[in-house]
Image 1 (cartoon, rainbow, N blue to C red):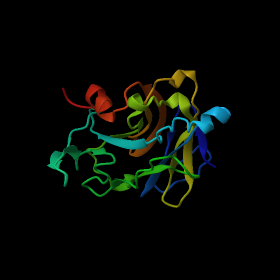
Image 2 (cartoon, rainbow, N blue to C red; image 1 turned 180 degrees about the vertical axis):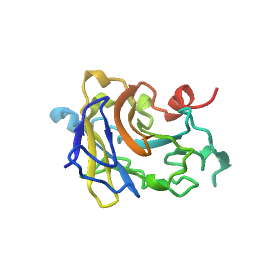
Image 3 (cartoon, rainbow, N blue to C red; image 1 turned 135 degrees about the horizontal axis):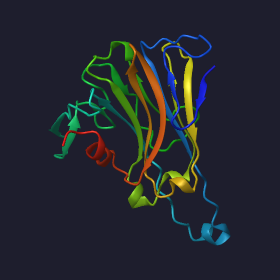
Image 4 (cartoon, helix red, strand yellow; image 1 turned 45 degrees about the horizontal axis):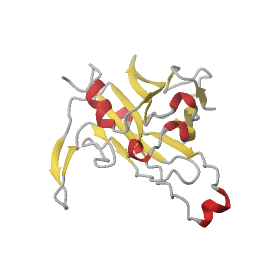
Amino acid sequence: MAINLVKGQTIDLRKNDKGEEFDLSQVTVGLGWDIRQKKSGGFLGKLMGGNKEADYDLDAVAFLLDANGKVADLGRTVQTNDGRSMGLYQGDVIFFNSMKHPSGHVWLTGDNRTGAGEGDDEQVIVKLDALDQKYQKIVFLVTIYQGRQNGQHFGMVDNAFIRAVDARGKEIARFSMSGDATYNNMCSMVFAEVYRKDNGWKFRALGNAEATDSFVDILKSSYTYQ
């Protein structure tokens, strides 16, 4: 049975307190959320067409960290087909513009732009047992794309969760949170981390909210060499 974690709690991913062992050859870190429905504007709002709210585009991001807790490889900058420059490509940051790590051992399955549907809205797959020893920790974040511009924040998000599932489909642990006043105007969430410990892996629930809607801001402030 999966463990329901509270903020700050840490567990062993390989084996739980009941002696149940998990296969870490491939771990799915799934993230999900629901958007709190706003109250209807009534008959007049419907008559006038109302103001259509932009979809909530929540993005899962993973930072692969070295022994110093930093991203050592920030990737490279490439030119897209439309002439734009795109940075952080094929480095140790997994996100919507660079969905697969060069090692082939970490990848993002897709970009869910609405949070609609049951189950995980986004997933990061990690082959923990195959990951190079130079990677000591992986941090998982969720950001609301253009949240500042659209007035969207985690106070409006319900039933957000992050969970770890082993290679056999067994849920190891889950950390859940719902939007409240604490998360008002917070557009990013450092949700959880996995890290090496005693030749195994630990999972820690974090739930640290940030005002920025850009994971790059968090990357620069806490996870890069200055």
